[in-house]
Every structure is written in C-alpha cells, then in structure tokens.
Image (tube, rainbow, N blue to C red):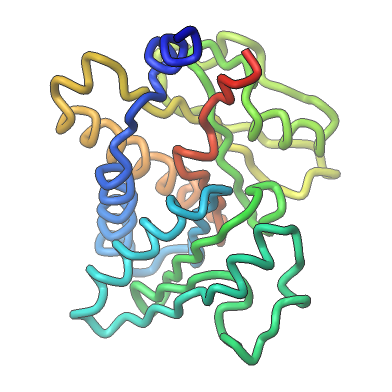
Length: 236
C-alpha cells in the first residue's frame, strides 16, 4: 500500500508510454523539418527498459515506413547482449551488421536517430541530458551516474528557477562537452485529467533540448526516455 501511494504522489504511476514516444517522435521530426542544415547529426534515445525501447523503435519505424527514410531494427540477440552488459563488438554483427547495437532510423540526409537499450552514460555523444526535479537536486540514478563520472560537479540546488532546462559545461575530463539539465513533466493526477496538456508540455521540452544542442553547434546528443529516469520506489 505504501509503495502504491508513493508511486502516485511522486507522479510516476501510469505514465502514458504511447503518448511519450509519440511526442519524442514529433519533436524530432519538427526539428528535422526546420533545421535542414543543422550541426546536430545524431540523436540517441536511451533506456534500460526493453519495452520502452521497443515502443519508441516501433513508432519511428511505423511513421517513417511511408517515406524514403530507412530503419534498421535491433535483433533479439542484440537486445539480450546489451541487457547483460556486452559491448557492441561482442555482438554478432552478422545478425545485423549496420546497427552496431542500435536501432538506426535515418530521418533525413543529415539526421539519424539511434535507439539504444542500456545505460545513457555508456553512450558516446557531445551532449547528455540529465533529468532533474524542479529543485535541481541531481538525486536520481541518471544524475548520480553522470556526476560520478565527472567528479561530482553538480549544479547548485535550486538553479533551475522557472526554466525547464539549463546547460552546464563540464571540465575537460568529462566525456561530454555539455550537460543539459531538464525538468521532465510528471504525469500526476492533474495531467491524468488532461493528458493532451502533458503531451504538449513534453513535446515543447523535447524541442527545447534538441534546439539547445543545435545552438551549441554540437553533433550528437543522448536523451533518456522517461522510464529510465523514474524513481525506484522499492528502496523507499
């Protein structure tokens, strides 16, 4: 009973998965259609949850099937290998020689989407997105993983203010050139009464994140899906 209550008040109960992946897709395609000569060449969507990864893979493949874009699916062996921590070199490339552990969707001549099952901190990208709460406490598994790799230089709590995203330039030793801290909308009781409002807010946030990377003239960004950033209430 306590765990169910905490799931509800923390806003992670019954997150509309289909709506989430739909908005990720729409934000990506909106960026692609308005930035034909962009610096950003690769967007990586990452999650540890296989069902979430398959959901976003499916929406990109289905919606792109009527265009000239190409989707390279991830085979079952690759999902299993990545889930158990194997590197792309350990995966049998004869099964799917082009995806290299990713599902690859080419949405334009200058932009590719790579959908990956695993930890976002393992992804090679110029920019990484760090989910935050409204107080910027960096107290979630992704944030802890990021800052454990860059020496714990966290933004000041409360730094988000009223803006949904802030950027941070880490030290030279960091594997990333920029960290974008983002407050993702929480699907709570109010949004459950108006799911379209939740979808709109998520779409706007995703576009701001992608455009921030473009404005910095970076070539790649790694973005977590909402399921990976959830709080593990089993430990509360």
